[in-house]
Every structure is written in C-alpha cells, then in structure tokens.
Length: 449
Image (cartoon, rainbow, N blue to C red; front, side, top):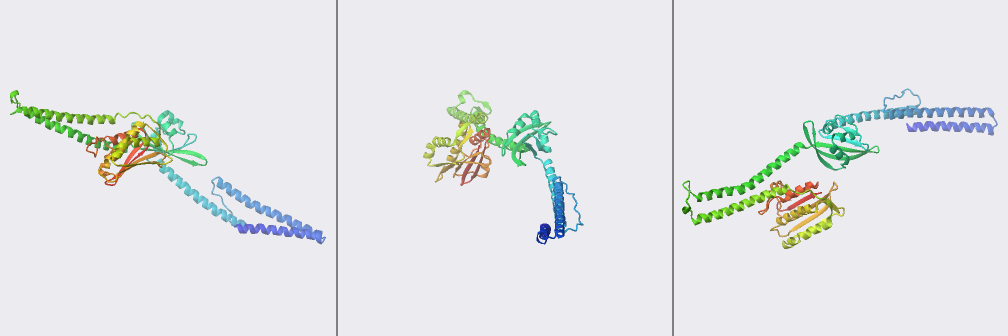
C-alpha cells in the first residue's frame, strides 16, 4: 500500500515537473506562447488532482482515526475504487479496523470476566485513588465495610473510624488485623495493601480476607496443646501428693479406726515428717508452675525506643560472655550494613535474645565443636530479621510443633515458658518468631521485627 501511494505521488510530481519544464522551454526557448500556456494549464490540472488525491486520502485517514478515538469500529470502506493506491489504503485500513474490533471484543470479554471474578471473590477488594474515591468495591468489601454503596473513603470514617484510619495509613506490603461486627456477624479481617500507577494516577489496592475460621481453629488447637501440658504438669504434682497423703493416713489408722497416741511409733512420726516435706516440695513446685503461668499474662506494655543494633548485640555478647567462655563456645555476630536500628523495648528484647542464646548453649551440651551465630539482615518486606543458629542436638518434628506451647520443655530442669514468653513479647512489638530444626543438625530461630 505504501509503495503504491509513493508511486502515485511520484508520478504526479514527475508529470508536473515535465509540464513546467515544457511550458518554460516553449515560452523562453522557442518563443511559442500556445504550448507554454497549455503546459501551465496541464501543470494547474495536475496540481489540483494531486491536492484532491492527498486530501481524499487524508480525510479517509482522519475519519478512520476519529472513529477509533470514539471507540467506533463500525466504519465501512468502499470496495469499488478504481484507484489502486487508494483501494490498497482502504483494504489496509479495513484489516486494521477488523483487528481493532477483535481486540476490543476480547478486551471487553476479559474485562467483564475480571470484574465478575473480583465481584464474587471471597476476598474483599478495594481500590482507592489519591482523592479517596473508590474505583473498585466488590461484594465482600461492601459486606465488610457495612455499606451497600459508597463512592469515597470519607463515608467510612462515620461508620468505622478505626478501619478508616487503617485504610489511610496502611502502606504497600503491610498487613493489619481488624475485628468488625456487621449486623450479627463478626469478621476477623486480615488487611493487606499494594500500590499501582495507571495513567499517571496512583491507586491503593486493599484486600480484606476473613480469617476468623482459621484463627478459631488455631486457637482451639493451641488450647488443646496448653490443656495437655497443664494437665500433665498438674497430674505430675498432684498424683504423688494424693498417693503420699493416703500412705500417711494409713500410718495413723488400724483396722479402719484411728490409732491411739500410744500406738504411734517413732518411725511413724519420722515417716510423717518426711512425707510432709515431700508434699511441701510438690506444693511449692505446683505454686511455681502457677506463678510461671501468671508471668505469661503479666508482660508489661513495651516502651519502644530507638535501639542501635551494633552496641545492643555487643552488650548481649558481654552478658553471656562468661558462660560462653566456660562452655568453650564460639559466638559469632554478623550484621547487614543496611540494618542499623530497630524500635522496641530494650529490656523485653534483651529477655528474648538471652533466652534464645541460653537455649542454644543447652543444646550444645556434649557436642565437640560448639558454635552459635547471630545474623542480622533485612527481610524482603523491609523488616529486620535476627537469626540465632547453633549446631546443637536439634529437635524432632514433633517437638518443633510444641516448642511455643506454654510449659512444654525438652530440658530436665526447664519450666517451658521461655519461648512462649518470647513469642508474646514479639507479638506486642508487632513482630514474629519462627524456628527450624533438624535432629543432630542444629536449630535456627528467626525473629522478624
């Protein structure tokens, strides 16, 4: 089509040059006026034909572009044009128009499919522009917001001020938990955010997932684990006390009747004193167990300050230095240059880190080469990750599932609240703790804060 168009234009230009040259030659070279005038007439006619040709092509192109701009793909092109270049142009525009129509139909279908998927998704989706206007608000989002229709974020401020604050302040990659009640239904919402740019406009994309069922299942499972441990600990203390009290009772009975003072021997009195001491020890152990349980529920609210990581970890090394040297353990601390500070309660976080290091020290008992490594780096979400590793005896998969359950311990002299306490402290800081371990390979504990 382009070649034909160029050829037609060049042909017109060549004829116009020839007409102009012949007219000039006839007038100046041969002094003939009539041929010169005829040449000018031909030149004039050719100029008009060229202008009409170009205008016709331009008008058709402009008409086609305007139709596309107005989303009108129903434009028709004549099919009985004798001019081959113009006919080639029309055929090319027709092919392009058919292609645009096909793309438009497919795009419309995909858009409708995407809208349907979003509308009926079990996740609530909202997109908010820079002015607070909602671009997308699907069925579950309206249910969680408690409104059937709203066009701007400010409406939410009247309905749920806290949820409005979350939408205003949540940043890309962040996650918040918020509990709402809509009519008779409670929702525990996990709220996440992302940010996109479209046509020079910024949009905040918010997803809301109801995790009530998952949390309920986890809570029930946690309670079951806790009850099993508490039952085990209490029974371990109560059973000997009950057995011993029955034994002591029999020392002062004969044939079902109370012995007289003269019938009580010195050995009976000595056994009673020893038995009461055992009962006292068991009772104190049970009291200590209850005291540890109360400790889990009395963690103070964190007083957050800016903590410089380098001196903080060096202090930790100093605190544990004597134990580390006595046990012949190598302690290595490495830090990413991008990790300088964290915000938290230094006393509470010291308690967490000391517990982790002491756990590693206990796990290294009996190993030939003893190593503990503390590594600080930046996570993919921008948060600080502190990893404590050792090459100790490790844990089985069964024990690994229970290490954060209160009062569960693999130590002979442990109380089983260290890791539970650490988890509670990190939760108050908005952080998380996780563990990986393999028997005879070692253990890794990751803190994200």
